[in-house]
Image (cartoon, helix red, strand yellow):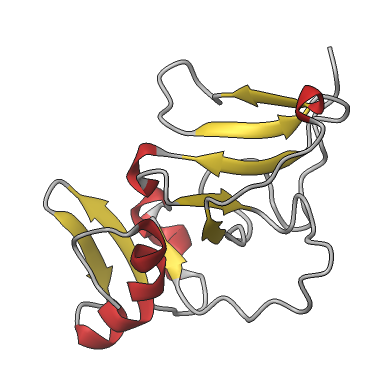
Amino acid sequence: KKASAPLPSGVTGVHGEGKPLDLRYWPNKLAVTGKEKLAFNRLRDDAASISMVTTCCSTLLCVDHPFYQTNAVLTFPEFCPYIGAGELPEISTRAFIKDWPVEKYAELPPKPGFYLTADGPAFEPPGPETEAACAPTFTAFANPHISA
């Protein structure tokens, strides 16, 4: 069995503790060479997300999820730094904020955030400013609930 890639600094591996992961969404326009060095898996049998990892060291390259409607992939630059991308802008919003325990989330520096409900996305703090701040994430998915 191959060892998993190490966790980034400040990430505990315990859901809702430590620092939030840096999530970056990119258009799903991947040109792949070396496909024989890739593997795909799910963290749990019932998970909707599919991870693309390297077979040599299990580095997490990107994730697909049905919500992205095949329009985007999720990447984690802390797990697999980008080469030639320059400096990334500071994270200005938080995604899936209801995944964090309320008391732990309250300890984080405030930023606009969203989570998904059966009726579509919900925003905290509520209001048009937060919706506008989060709109680029939904634009990446071509989500019909929000337009930038």
